[in-house]
Length: 211
Image 1 (spheres, rainbow, N blue to C red):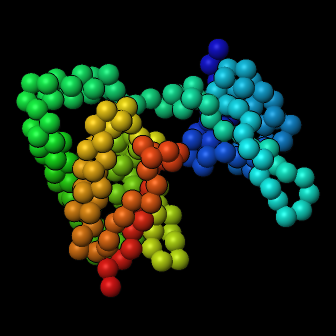
Image 2: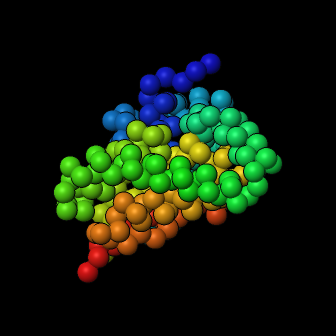
């Protein structure tokens, strides 16, 4: 049994925004809370969602939240994960860890070059560059978005298509951070804010404009 369009939107919302209440989901979908509960019940039967912690409010009763299960997250698969791990292990076994690190850095530099050209169209407008960077990352499967903060921006990657490979080889994450810093070094500082491998539900990067 597969999910329908509205159920698919619920899964997408939970993937991008994390645990949500029925009321918030209803507002997002433009349907009644009863309709959302029916969709959630179907998704729960498929083991794609589950009820999670209660959100305490200033007034009234606690609000139950809904979140993706492991099976729900698996509907957003890691890209070529088995092949990636096979390549990583083959390179490490035949050439050694140092050569593997060199290859990962080389791939990161090539990705930096691939992103650099389209980012030139944004000129010196840092906000425009970040929005375009998020679009490029989304095209590569990272479900990226930019959020404005009082003191900068947050580049959020709601999905990591290389998660399994990165668990096997964390240098992939280091290469990604280095790439972002290389792309934005003339305009901003980039620091990791959330890390999927450290237990966060997504990766996020704090971006602060140079003074």
